[in-house]
Image (cartoon, rainbow, N blue to C red):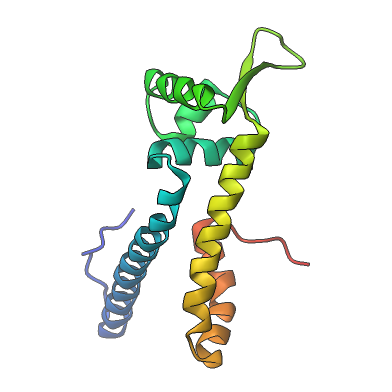
Length: 161
């Protein structure tokens, strides 16, 4: 992978490369600030960020093994095991045997855990709606046109309808 500071061969390529780096830096900063702002809505859930993150993987991804959850959350298995014990005690997840292999245990969200996650998502979306509503229609349209590009670079692009 080429270095961010690698020198392009032509002045035009150099200018284009600098513009791309500027866009990347600004997008990175904006994404972080937006996520931090939306995370304030998560305080209403009463759960710390690591618990919410793991619960989100379980709710939106479906039942999952502890090993796969640890990988998804980029933590070690003992860390995820402790976290799941806490979520179980709060009645947000439960362990279930795999239907095909009873030796495999998966963690799945309870109705309470799913409700908590969806309520949190609604709070985040409502905060975004309030911010978007304050923008001129032309800015909202510009964001709508940019969404497919943002989804593509984030790996969340939707299939064409």
